Image 1 (tube, rainbow, N blue to C red):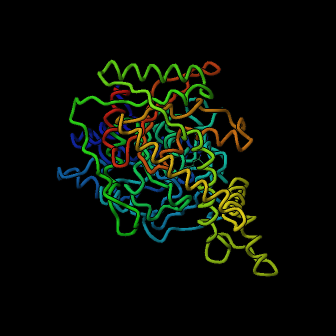
Image 2 (cartoon, rainbow, N blue to C red):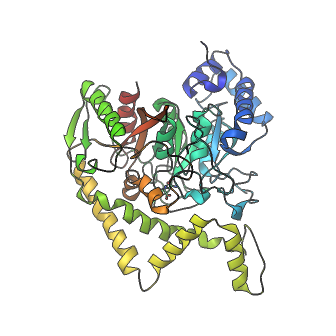
Image 3 (cartoon, helix red, strand yellow):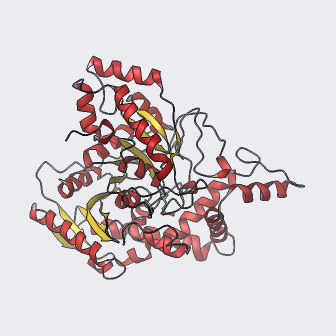
Length: 472
Ligand code: GLN
């Protein structure tokens, strides 16, 4: 059975475009039609863009000339916290409901240069805070594998757009797992680059020392193409680097996979753990070796993240004060201008994190909370560096459980526990990938689950190599 154009992978679509079996217009129309048909149910997009005729024609010309990059003419979905000039970028918040970007994020400039097309901006948890998209001010996105369940978050809309075949690929941001976790819940490959490998210029900041933009793809190859197009040092982001420190292993060279079994003894659902073991067996069958490793401090990663991240959130969101830009409410005094604007503009989770962050940075508590968490972050990073002396990558299940039901994790701490295996990559700045490892059954539905691999900084190529072994 031949696939519809919107169901192709990026590699398949690029080949079909080059072979003249498909035109850029046909590909765009197929994706746009699917997006318009499915979005009322799935709520993947906050806005589906009109066709950009000039961009479509330019992409077709480049393909016809035989000189086109892989992403030329490919319709992509972009998380609503990445700026695209002259489009709204709201971060799924009422605060920025009418904020129109005045410039392109660096990743968008690079994608435009590559001839990629933008299908629309995708739904997310407000300011990227959450693990389900239920914190969006515009309603949650739904998981196409079971619409009574969340797609994960915070980049849930981007994941749904690809998993439901509305876009061929998508970008999200990952501060504590927001690409890998929704990728796992929707059966996709999700990749969080080394901190600094991708410019953050034009990304609406959540936690500046943790945030990275990264891709969602249907395959490891697609994710790699999407990443390679946006990577690189950028004069507009002083924290960006070339991030190419590790030579890829030569084709066929075997890797040592570290498995911290002491972390998997409790909290992970039994059938998901069995799927994880099966994925590891596949790796050993392919000649890679497993190494038992200990990460004694890694159990503290989640509380450390939930101190450092809100501290940075409270600082980054201070600029949204009703005066400079964004929603503006006027009260009797300057203070009431602030209070009324921020009360009307921010949702409950955003307010919770601003309060938490302000507390951990306050003069009486900064030593007890923020500074202690920052020290623990360094200890954790050193522990991972040591572990990587004995292994090339570290394996974890991406999440402790498959996609959950709407409203199931209404208590914030149970939602935060979703991130137990993902936050470490952000705290240490290391790259991590989630690839599909199979599915588990819940209420007669097959729900995808993911395996996560982490590499030392700059070790992205190892992750693509090992990810391919699991998925091929
Ligand atoms: N779920 C995590 C949080 O709520 C991660 C968010 C993210 O990566 N943007 O903070």
